[in-house]
Structures are given as C-alpha cells and as structure tokens.
Amino acid sequence: MLYGVIFGAIVFFVIIILIAKNSDAIFHKLSNDEIGANGENFVAGILNEICEDSVIFNDILFKDKNGKLTQIDHIVIRSNGIFVIETKNYAGRIYGKDE
Image 1 (tube, rainbow, N blue to C red):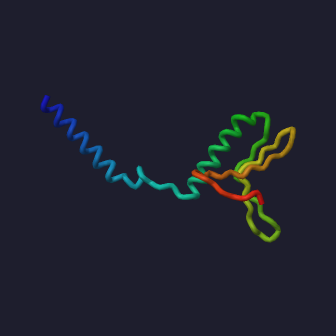
Image 2 (tube, rainbow, N blue to C red):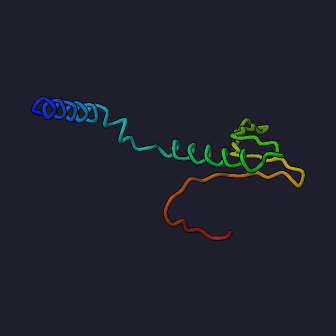
Image 3 (tube, rainbow, N blue to C red):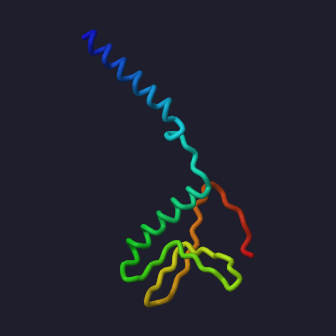
C-alpha cells in the first residue's frame, strides 16, 4: 500500500514537472495569423464536405500588373455560379455599418 502511494506521488510530481517545463507549449496564445488560418482551414473542410459537385480553390494568391498581391480565401465553382468567400475568425461582438 505504501509503495502504491509513493509511486502515485512520484508520477504526480513527474507530470507537474513536465507541465511546468512545457507550459509555453501548453498555454501558447495563438497569434492572429494562427487564429485566421484555423478559421480558413475549418471553412475549407466544411466546403469540401457540402460542395461535393463543385471545384474548390483555397488560399489563392493573385498578383496585379503592379506586382501587388491579393489573397482570396476560397473560390467555389458550381454549375449555378462562382462564389468568392472571405473567412474571418472573430469572437465576441462585431460592430460595423452596411457601407
């Protein structure tokens, strides 16, 4: 019985030490770019599931004649049209105007 308690205590402290050493990885705060990429990947997965009869392009970069880059998150080509989708991964209240 005593050996079980000692073993349990050792395992507990080893876990605590590992968590403390890796706390940056465990409690890593995602950057805005990482949050945005997660949102885009989520939407891409949904589009792939619900648009089986479509051609889907994700994360497309275009360069204009002046060399400026423009990025489009998703383009869905279907028999009834071409859909361009911009993904935002925001939380909380979002305020804006229709203009």
